[in-house]
Image 1 (cartoon, rainbow, N blue to C red):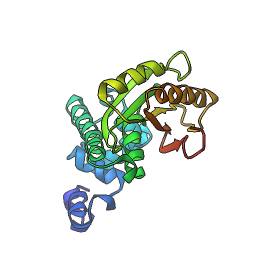
Image 2: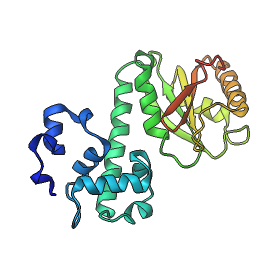
Image 3: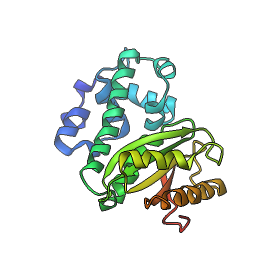
Length: 224
């Protein structure tokens, strides 16, 4: 059955207008993005099929161009549109953090880090450089690969902090394995970064580990 034949209050677009985007299921939101279905399938049917095929909304949004375009009903145009949506979401969160102190909203900080790192298929080490009011100056991915003493360079982090006149930092990295528990290597590199920054009177406020939907704070664990 075509969506136009559904009761008005069950159609995704009308439902969003009446009840807000949060009231929609993932498939309904994706259906609005897709706009149309394919022969024999409504946009919602196609959306459900795509979510099942990719393993969920996050995996679909993180899919490579080649993988994304292999799915029936998708192509380069949809891939470009989706990546634009993802990037706008990231920039929205970054702008929000620039307009207020990071610790005025720990939830916003976590959401920002999730948006930046959750979809990465390789390990990425990034830094949030903060001003003296703990507002976000710059977010930068700096290192890629295994997070250990050979891959992360505290002096490079400190050098960039001086360039930006940063007063404090939050560092973060992802665990593509999906296990957020900090490793011994995570704790060791945190100590090295903190010591390097302390020489410059720059504070390391936290080291966050992102895995799947979870963000673990080493500061909250007493590991800073």
